[in-house]
Image (cartoon, rainbow, N blue to C red; front, side, top):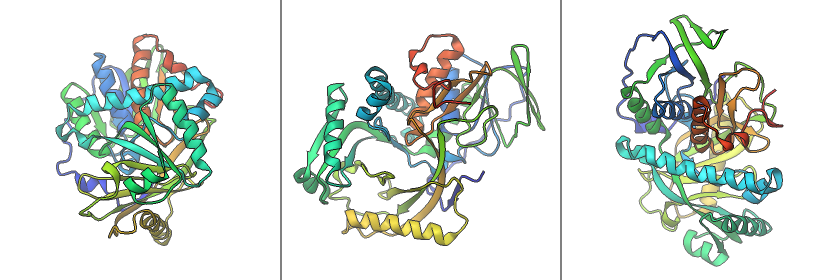
Length: 404
């Protein structure tokens, strides 16, 4: 399935393509990862840290799937607010899940500190404003939930919002220690580091048949056979080998990237900005002083074939930007539409397949895919090593809205 269309921004920021080492297929790998995006290489990094012999197989080129359309926004907050998640799964697990997201951003930062240019990782605060006046009470309730459980946050009233952002809204929730990243730089640099540490990377290879023999699996391809003990599927929004996700839904979202601008005032400290409305708008700035704004989600999986449709939605996004920041002289330099996977319970799908031992899914469905991928890489590596990980039960495939 084609998962994005239009003109993409992140590839223009890459000046040196990854040079993949042409390794012969080894007789045996302890782990094989299928998928060459953010999730796949975070899993590879974690497995290498654990001392495992690992190969990664990608059917196209790396970082060409959902990664290239990722806006690079890292929140510890989620599409479902903490107080809502508490109502859904209980206080203990909801708070722990939010803590997992918070810790995942810290872990991603640790990894980027070892990469060239740190993959443009930058800590940011996030500002979620009340789209309508009545939403302010919801933000206040969320502020109280986050503050009670020790997450760094503030609540801004209309006066502070006007002073710091220039537009008028009833209230806003501000969370600290979120971040932004260049997703393509991140994957390419992490791939380079991983292969220097022994990862075998195989691109443009399609796995045709999976054959289980005793405690091993043989992957049949036209390029040869791969044998492994464990398989991790980090395939994003592509077809899964076994089962369907009961609680998943596929949608499409639109994004524009503007020209560079000279002065971001009153955009407060290059914050990440989003809103309470669903579907919501989300915005960030870039190191070369552009604005990325996305949203207008639609309940359709396939990206539009019509250029007119993309242009129409892109102009709507530009109009929304002008409504908030009318003094910015901006135009659209890049615009695209991308498919993304959502989950009914707003949790990712991570863990061992309940009916296929040694097959693991690392699927960061939802609006926080990079963060979820970091969480999943750590959980699955523990499961591979036989190390107990209590977090695994929160995102398990065996839950009510898991796999069937």
